[in-house]
Image 1 (tube, rainbow, N blue to C red):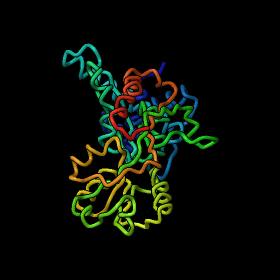
Image 2 (cartoon, rainbow, N blue to C red; image 1 turned 30 degrees about the horizontal axis):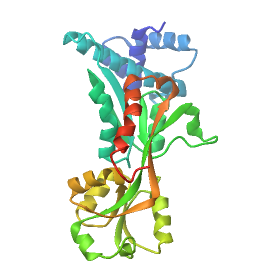
Image 3 (spheres, rainbow, N blue to C red; image 1 turned 60 degrees about the vertical axis):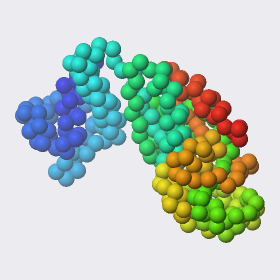
Image 4 (spheres, helix red, strand yellow; image 1 turned 180 degrees about the horizontal axis):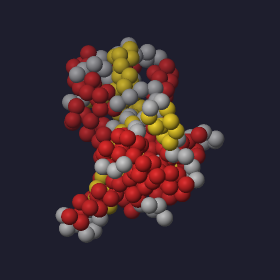
Length: 306
């Protein structure tokens, strides 16, 4: 069994950089810390630090131990706070990663079933790129990731997660624009978009290349005035009338209401998918189950959804 005092000494050294600095923080001797670290390394059978100049650098094993130590101490702090406050039933915690290009409205709707059904739901959200969030998921620092793609097939390195991809739902796209922009570019859809200013999601977004192919197919050649990895920033520029955007049809009315945009037309040939990626050992998380079960209702409300 792990001695948690040893783990605390390890954590303090890892976050301080040196044994001497850790000794000052813990009010113990440097020799005491060195002794406890040696015992912990003996127990794991791995070196946790290597010397790099005057500081200690974590080995690969040390980095893994640090990830778990952070979670252990987070849970310990949560336990202490709940007992002090008289909360003798621990709140259910759900740690979610949301890819940058997932619309915030979509993320909220997908997560809401878990919050509504939980008596004491604690939600922790992290945003980032797909690969970065997959690494967090693989380290068990997240329970699931909401993304516009699933785990890649074949022998891609992310498959080492032994994870599961769950299709939450899919939607066609609707082109939206500021009223002034719509008035300036009138005519039948999609021909009215010829030479029009357009805001695209970043190249990492699953629909980026498909939109480009759709433009080419119809000979539209819009002027791409911006590409954004963050969906909220893209919508903010659309609100300023900078260019047209393509948004999931299931969210079109909500985005129009929030950003003062108008629908221009629907792109039936492009269907954007939304996925949840989970690690195998986390599949039984009750909040994750509620999200997977409730996703159908999120997408059923839009007519142009597949």
